[in-house]
Amino acid sequence: MDGHDHPAGRIRRRALLAAAIAGVGLAATVVLRPRPAVTEAADDVDGDALQAALDAVAPGGDFVIDRAWVRSRSLVIRSPLRLRFTGAGAVRMASDATAIVVQASAVEVVDAKVTGAGADSGGAGHGIAVMGSRDAPLRRISIRGGRFQDIPHDGVHLEYCDRFRVTGTTMERLGYAGILGVGVVDGVVDDNSVRDVRQPGGRVNSYGITLTRDARWDTATARRSARVRVTGNRIADVPAWEGIDTHAGEDIEIRGNVVTGCRVGIAAVPSKDPSDRGQTSVAPIRLVIADNTVTKSAGLSPGSAIVVSGAGTTVGSTRPRATGVVSGNVLTGGGGAAGEAGILLKLTRGMTVDGNRIEASIDNAVCLAHSNAAVVVRANRILGVRGSGVGVNVRAGANRGSIAGNTFESTRHELAVAVRFGDADNRFVVRGNSWGTARVHIARGGATVTTG
Image 1 (cartoon, rainbow, N blue to C red):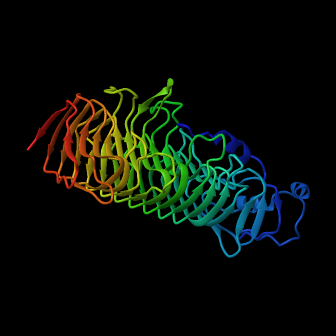
Image 2 (cartoon, rainbow, N blue to C red; image 1 turned 120 degrees about the vertical axis):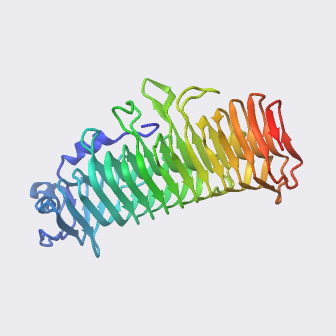
């Protein structure tokens, strides 16, 4: 994975161990008699009653946790079943292990209450880890409701799952990500609340929700995340990195989410080249980023509200381009550096940026950094830009497209330039825009610009 430390091997090793328990508990289907709290060493001798009860459930059955358990090892689901938490049912981890590991298809986890060993620990433990493999993906996984807090790594971690859903969860104080999917397809991530993702020392990134792939391999070996809908989620306070992300996703729909307090609101970017980690080789394609609300807080490091990038690093790169649409979003406060913006595009083909409201950006409202072919920027409403004060900045070269029907308005911050071309190697049609009080309507910079 790109910048993602990969805990799969450690999870699988821990999942083979019995769980050590301190406390009392009750599990439906196989009923355990309450007993006094014992030491972890005594519990090791006595065996793991909770794991044994879960293992005894017939395939397709129900298992209920209705009391609080303190555990130091993972509770492993090895067969199809429904695991439900009711009443005081909860799991608190006394170690850095993952709380619940799913190793079977057709599993539903309902209203889980999981407390980890701490979001600042730098550990690898997840709240729930669903562990399919490249050769044998898991299917029909549902994680519905529940609360996850103080988790060292991810609240819900999924690898190689088909036809899955994560819905209605609440997560706070996480070390790396709220919900992370690797090679997941045909899924829905909806109506979740993720807040306060810490990114402790030693980690280079963090996410509210991210859908990625294992970039140590090419796509013939390690598939993309594909055909996943990310809708109606609320992401807050990922100050060091990104609210919602996909690395090289295919047919990913990111719609109707509310993202606040993140360095970058929504990012769709490429995955690394397995043979040259300094390059990228797999672009996100057929994206839909629509109807989201992204608000960037003051005081965060520079970052765009929405960024879309294809593969490659150089102007005019022939590596795969990102494709899709960015439409109907309400974006406030993105930018903060020359190459950042409310919406930032680079290395794309046929992208449409349509009907967005972009307010209080810093330096640029829309930045077409370089290498955007057949890009369409239309019917956007741009309200005030601080700093350099550029509405649409076609910053470097190899950009081709149209800028039409946009409305440029000044609020407290007058636009210095509505549309700026920073390189002669750009060809655009610019027509039908409303310039407002922008001091300069079009700064041509030697580019080929057709107006009228």
